[in-house]
Image 1 (spheres, rainbow, N blue to C red):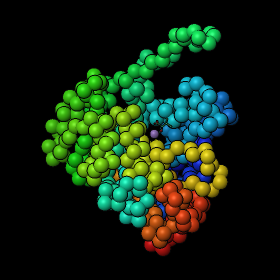
Image 2: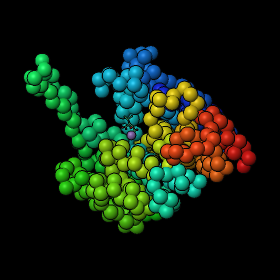
Image 3: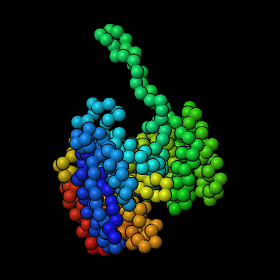
Amino acid sequence: MAERIVLLPGDGIGPEVTEQARLVLVAAGAQAGLEFDFVEELIGGCSIDAYGTPLREEVIEACRGSRAVLLGAVGGPRWDEMPVAVRPEKGLLAIRKALGLFANLRPAAVMPALVNASALRPEIVEGVDLLVVRELTGGIYFGEPRGREGEAPASTGEKGTRRALNAMVYEEHEIERITRVAFEQARLRRNHVTHVHKANVLDVSQLWMEVVDEVAKDYPDVELAHQLVDSCAMLLVQEPKRFDVIVTGNLFGDILSDEAAMITGSLGMLPSASLATGGFGLFEPVHGSAPDIAGQDLANPLAAIQSVAMLLETSFGSDVATGPGATRAAAAIRKAVADVLDAGHRSGDLLLPGETRDTVGCKRMGELVLDALGRD
Ligand code: IPM
Ligand code: MN
């Protein structure tokens, strides 16, 4: 039976990277005995253009009826002037909320071939392998009350009365469930969790501290450290190897995962999984829609392709029938990506400023991964 996958290519480079990722999914899936049935839907700016809203209820329903969702990226300058309630990004936030995708896993591992592509020194980045576990459906992204009030100055020289407000709100149960995900992930890795917070200022962070400490009692085999977010930002650059699993709230996780990504050489490399209770997931590259290079076949599809590896592993890996094949297929994709990079192929984002060497486009990079997959 074909497995239903919803594709949400979105805006900018989203469609080009998603197409390469889809082709890799088909090929790797076939090797694992999996067959897919793809349904493509709109999200973000393209959905605003077509329907006046970044996410329709029908799309959420289609996702609910699927085994997994593969998303590209949303947003672009065309929609930048719109109020936050109807911007493309609202589609992404709404789908996370509607599907209950509270656990965002963002692995940042440095591939040996890319040790010199990082802006940091090779000896600092070599061997970095960390996982940001970001809470994705709470915190300041969704807290109420929120909004704007007051008036802009009526004429020059006058004072305005504008005020804007967002609230960082976390319920105990939200903190507990994401913390459990982090500790479970640590058990599959190096048994270390760093909880990142701002408890010297925020009440919310103090609650996180308490709940994380309580949950930690159930995982005596996993070591726990608490780290202030500002010093964590510094340590990520100074000594990234000290981190295994980082667990944190929505906003800190957003910022730190981009920082972690750059340690690995490029934001163009990093995949992510956003999971609900029970394991249903949406998979997407961490990078954005890169409107400046959209439609020019310049994008790096490797983040989307590695998101497909996470999809296979997470959505099919624990299934009795499909599990072993899907897990092997995910490993085969990762090896194919490493082989392509080891052979010296690079997309433009993987070059350092001033570095000159031939680069490959989005399609060609996808083909190279498919070729490498076929050789195994
Ligand atoms: C991300 C993105 C989104 C976020 C934006 C596009 C809403 O930056 O997935 O990290 O802030 O969560
Ligand atoms: Mn982000």
